[in-house]
Length: 148
Image 1: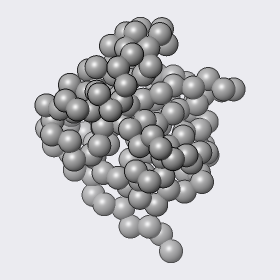
Image 2: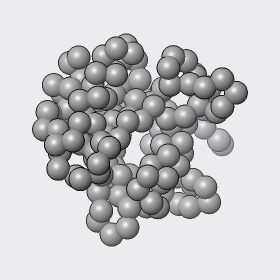
Image 3: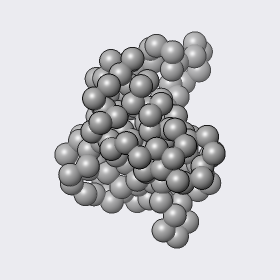
């Protein structure tokens, strides 16, 4: 039985009229990998099956082919073992204790770490957290970034 997906809500400065909802994503511009985070993602819902395909597509445009993501299952609804995105199977690793991050793997053990801003976060706080996680050489812990 298919899992019903909630409608994507496109609102605020992250949406463009007439264009499908794009992931609210901000990446560290140099990709030097010198900081804790390689960027930040602000999903619209906790439904990973609704959110992950667009994120993987967007990240693939920057990082190359994504083969795996790692996330804390307690922060998401209905986490499968894998998801099909653009005809490719993306494996999902489950872990606990870090609902404010998602790891993305391309190739062999080439990991990127994104701060995950909770869906219900107010726009100003989300923008601040995302900007902090996207600064080159960032070393601020996720909990501190999310405090606003």
